[in-house]
Length: 112
Image (cartoon, rainbow, N blue to C red):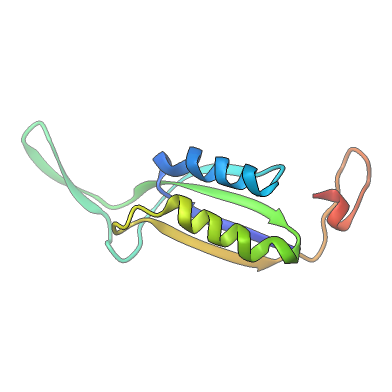
């Protein structure tokens, strides 16, 4: 099993969720986060005054999938979240040692 974590622009969340649903992903976790990458934030103008925004609002999506689904999930997230502009985000894939569904006690792939 793999944990796929994607940090994306907030307005792309619905497109990514719909794309993952089409692939058969049954559940995901979404967290509102703030951060920056190479762009180191941005400057904005508010009521005529310019100020720097160091941490930009992002959304982090986490989904655990079988090993054989990993590549298609990563590709689908990348395609759905892409705007072609700086700050589109990142995708990380991490090995998951084990999983357990608390209600039923199922473990491994059955738990996801």
